Image (tube, rainbow, N blue to C red):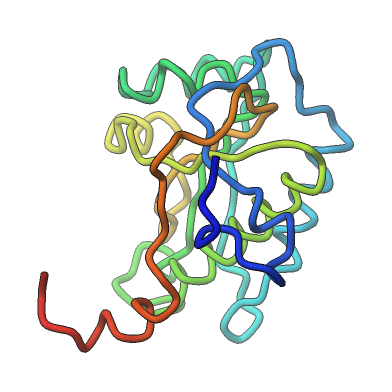
Amino acid sequence: MRDSQDTPGGIHPLLAGRFSPYQFDPSARVDDQALGLLLEAARWAPSAGNSQPWGFFLGRPGEPDHDRLLSHLAPSSARWAADAGLLVVTLTRRHVDATPLLYSEFADYDLGQAVAHLTVQAQALGLATHQFRAFDLEGLTKDLDPNPGWAIVSMVAVGKAVGEPREGRGRRSAAHLRSAPWAPAE
């Protein structure tokens, strides 16, 4: 159960109800319609200069790309992510082709915006997301071989959550968010 500090009045229920599950219903699928809405939500995210420097590699259970992604998961994430209805590899375009020239210094930030939009859309569809980095980045990059200038950043498991948020997943206060960059190190 969340404490009152975690769910203040006025915050949208889609945001207040979001959590990163450690268990997904393996029988729940992310169908084509839901997938289309998730990608559409990401497409409408803001980006610097409208550059939209993000891309996704997708795998659903029963599809060859899903098995391809599973082989790169760390044991810690394989325990729960394998049951999700969709695995999403997030990529950002950091450089102009194979040059050291930055495509956008905001590329990672913009990718985060797109994933946040996807996350909220998932909540609206009754799905949950869990973003993670527990996978073999080098192996996955070699396997997927993204175009020059593109980099894999993270993965997102999407599906029907089983259970409730873990106890004790408190959040820092809003006041702390404003003071943390200037406060002495803890």
